[in-house]
Image (cartoon, rainbow, N blue to C red):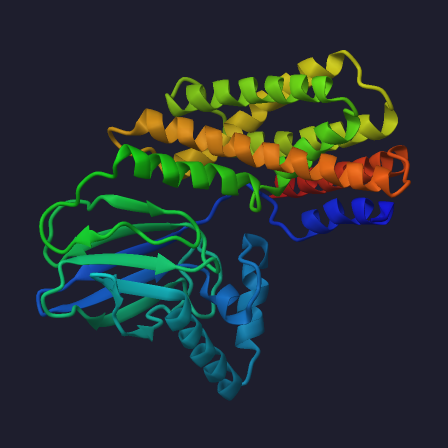
Length: 372
């Protein structure tokens, strides 16, 4: 492994992500069971990006829509047909464990974009329509890793009131939900598993800003004890603000939190590059930065929601998942540095260029988030 790899990777990661790494999008699904024995599932997602195989980023919405509109009518129809095939491969509506066939329609395609909404050539809703198998008792929904985490609501035609929302991790499947009668609340074990996975995946692979921050901590600390002290300070800080924010005690707008988180990444990278030794003030700064990152985690958890009756379990599980993700980042960085040392390389030849790349990524995000 060459130092150039450490130099290029953070910059490539930054270039490939959206301006707000905490803007965790969801695939919202409304599955309606009709009295005539049919079902429809309205799947809300970025259809333009899916059709073109592009990352789903707010900054690219206009460009993606323009690219589709510029196609010839025949090429556009071919693109839509490909999207429909993709949706049939990557989505599943299962009754009693068996997938039910469905047809795909794009009800918003060709409609004018509502004021204030992101431009879209194909719309933001794919409607799946099919028939409920005779005698079916339960239904579940699956979306592949091509889609963000799923929030699904199962409703019956004519049902009054808002239905409960089921949260599904990326690439996962919802619990089997009964076709008649209320769904039982998720067990404590199921809540623990689900929010643990959501917390861990918010760091790896989807939380690149947190990955670079934690990697910056690991790069400067050649010894385990100072690194553990920093990680502990960071953990205590973001756990405190995550808990306080979830309880409604502390609140700060994402438009303030997100640029400051990016700035903390830039600071850690620059301090690594300019100060070859770990300074005593680093611990206090890491604690302060942890408070900011905790507010970022709280924003994500606010979007996910905490289940009634399992709020404490969900909160602790999400936080534990975050910690596991951070430990995985540290293990990867320290392992890579150890391999480099065993190959005869000097640690210093890696730390400075990698830290500068982390600083560049942080500054890049800072500017984009301030302008977003």
